[in-house]
Image (tube, rainbow, N blue to C red; front, side, top):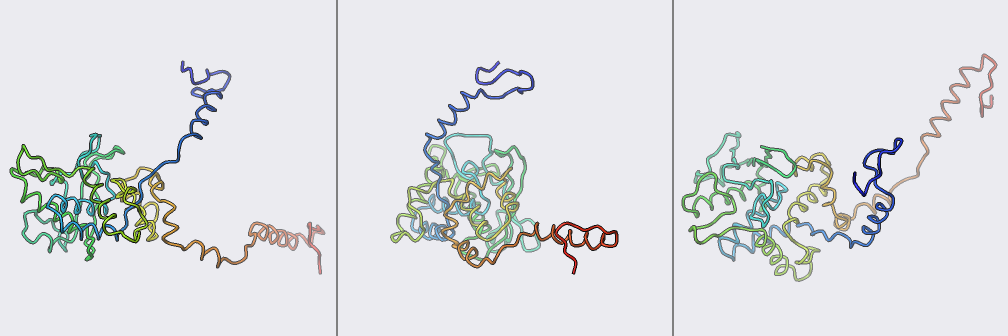
Length: 305
């Protein structure tokens, strides 16, 4: 038997925690500092990431394209970049990305006009943290600076042209030109690109974010917040981000209220309230009184005219 739980005594139930242990854990929780979650990226910040990456090397440009591509699919860091701890999630390879034209026919990644012809991109998540396998998501071309199709097309084309001996199983964050010279996009480089862009192009705090508040989780939370601010339903956000529950609501930070500033106006424009339950009950009593009037029944609170 567990020393932290009570024994099953007359319906007490198995697994009931001892009151002293429960109070101790509650005290520990009260002493814990508040969670320090990373702030969400914005579309404006991501556009500046692409702009600043043009002045850097090929590895930084590849990182910028991976960040933008991951944003549109609300990816976890372990899915699109090298992480320190390898988990259950299978990183993306070239074979997991499929491009389609206007008529939704597949296009080869070797097509020289891939960026111009591709209108859709589908990514297959082979194995994930939530246990779902071979889970596919598709995004369409946006005709904007931030475009998932163009970002992933540049990623695939750069890997095919740079990595010697490249195959379909080559990971999307691998730009190694030689085996002894590994050039991988890792989580540390992703954080550096985000923080550097925020620090260099943010002299007047136009993003509302400090550089040290950004990290790899900012991409996934930014995707959830971007959809939430455009009034997408919880179910649609949950499907795109492949959340098995409403856990993504933790990414919807209170800073959304600061950006939208809509709730105060809606609250100020609200009209008077009416107790519908009381009104419905009063009407039912009046109908009942009229129905029973011929029987000589005087209903409660009913005064005949």
